[in-house]
Length: 64
Image 1 (cartoon, rainbow, N blue to C red):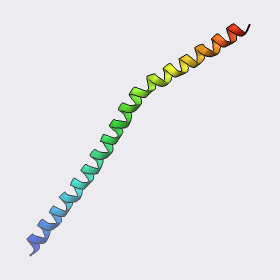
Image 2 (cartoon, rainbow, N blue to C red):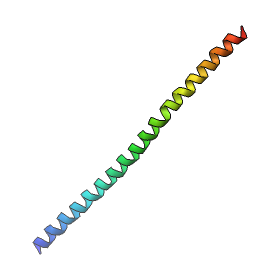
Image 3 (cartoon, rainbow, N blue to C red):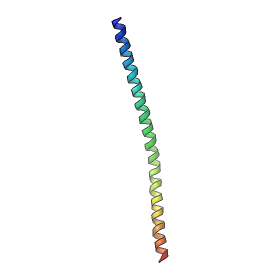
Image 4 (cartoon, rainbow, N blue to C red):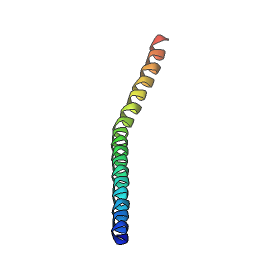
């Protein structure tokens, strides 16, 4: 009986550890997705800012 309880406790500990690792994996995958999306959008934002700056300078130049 004592051996059976120890085995059940060990199995439960392993199940909990497995759940924890699965949750951590999901978290890391979500973070990877977020970073890859940001990697794509960052240059687009910089390009947008550059176009805005050029437009502002051109409008000031052509007004005078």
